[in-house]
Structure formats: structure tokens, C-alpha cells
Length: 280
Image (cartoon, rainbow, N blue to C red; front, side, top):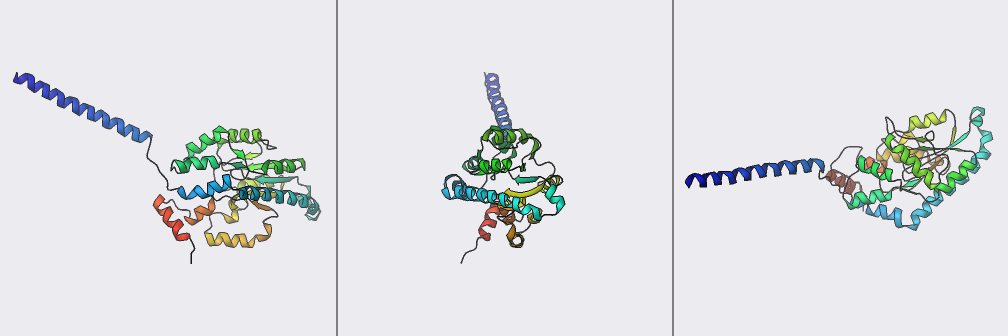
């Protein structure tokens, strides 16, 4: 009887140890598959709502593309004043994609609702849906530019696996001149300068349009806040003439400049944003 009780007790202990072991392994594996990554991004809600719900945002977008149309017309008249080599080149209009011609605010909203940082796989999944809507005024302007004989180039920092869904999305919405040749994705670097230089080999860029200063010129890249202000002041005559800027308060290099382009924790980012506020 004692032997039987001993064996029974030993069996219960062994079963408990084994079940605990496998439960621990299972939990560890689940944790590895679904890491608890959160982001303090509730501060973006106002910016997202402004883009999605403010008529003022639509007005600013229409204003930007209306000015672009007027500048394109003026460029035809000013062409004769250019050096002969430039006059002979066909015209091009260069646009950024995200938040310049395509609206990705739904993807930003998902990030905020789920307190997620930017995750490349989730961003690619959104692009693969091909559901981004057009920024107000973008389709009409680019079709007008295309009818005027300007070549349209879409210069984006989307990556290679996102190129075809980007082309599909743009074509479905009715954007003109969309092809593997005219959509320039990011290859080795985020800077768009090399891609602009490639376009300039055959074309004269009449307009550069984007939501980020880096879409317009490399003089703004990786500069601190004060230097970005200074560069804008130096080039003030270019804005509304060759440079057209779309509003984007959701994200951008302007925020990276606040973080001094560092890889910071969420707590550090929150502190940097608070310290950057000017008050009285």
C-alpha cells in the first residue's frame, strides 16, 4: 500500500513538472511570435483627424495644386529665358507619393488605435491593400500637367516589394503616366537627390511637390531645427514657384529633427516633444 501511494504521489509530481515545462515553452514561443511592442503615439490623433475631417485640410491641398497649375502655365512663358540646353529638355513634374498624392491616414489611425510604432511589415500590408485614396486636387493637377506635355515622376521612399502595388493603386485612382519607369522607389538610401539627378539627365524639372522638405532638395536633409528654418528662409522665393508643399502634421522629417535624428525610447521622444514646446 505504501509503495502504491508513493508511486501515485511521484506520478502526480512528475505530471505537474512536465505540464509546467511545456506551458513555459509555449508561453515563450508565443511571446517570441507576438512581442509586446507599444508606442506613445496618442499625440498624433489631432493631426490624423485634421487630415481626415478638416475642410481646411482639403482647402490647403486644393490650394497647393491650384498654385502648381498656375506655376506650370507660367513656366511655359518663362521657358524662353532659360539657357538653350535647358529649353530643349522636355519638362517634368516630380511628386512624392505618401501624403502628397496618396492619403495613408487610415494606416496612421490603425497605429494609434493599437499603440503601435512604425512596423515595416504592417506598412507593406497596408500598401498591398491598394486602398489609399488620392489627396484632394492631385489627380486633376497631374492629368493637367500630363496634357501640357510634362512627364510625371513619382519619387517615393517605398521599397521594391511595394512598387507594383503602388503602381496599381495610382493607376486605379486615375493618376497619369504611371509605370515602372516613372515610379522611383528607394533602393540604397532614403535621400532622393540621386533619383532627382537621374531625372535631370533627360528632363528639366519644372516643379517639385511634396509634404516633406527632403522631397524638394538635399539642402534640408538631416539638419537640426534651426538650420532647417534657415534653409527655408534662404529659399523663400522658391516656395509657390518651383517648390510646392502639402501639409502633413502626422509624421515627417520635422519630427525627426525634434528627436535630433536619434533612435530614442518612447519616453525619450515624449520628453523631447515636451521640451521643444515654446510657451510664455
